[in-house]
Length: 92
Image (tube, rainbow, N blue to C red; front, side, top):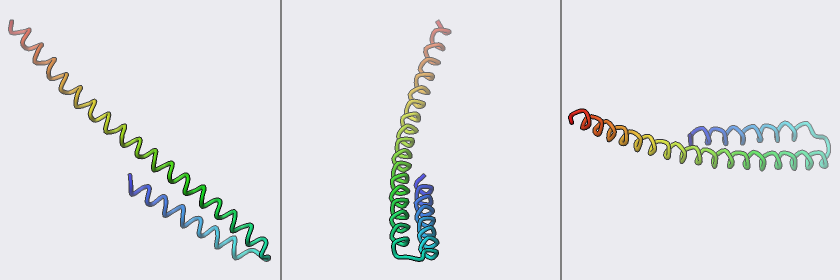
C-alpha cells in the first residue's frame, strides 16, 4: 500500500512539474507567467492534500483489516470451542 502512495505522489509531482513547464513555455507576458505559476501551485497543493487524504484512508483501511483479522481469529476459536462442546454432548 505504501508503494502505491509513493508512486501516486511521484506521479502527481511529475504531472504538476510537466504542467508548470508547459504553461511556463507558452506564456508571453510576466503577468500570465505569474497567473499560471499560481494556478500550478494551487494545483500542487490540491494534489498534496488529496495524497494526504489517500494516505489517511489507507491507514484506516489497514486498521480495519487488522480488526477483521482479529475478529476472524476469535470466530475460529469460538467455532473450535463449539465443536468440542458438540463432541462432548455426543459422547454423553
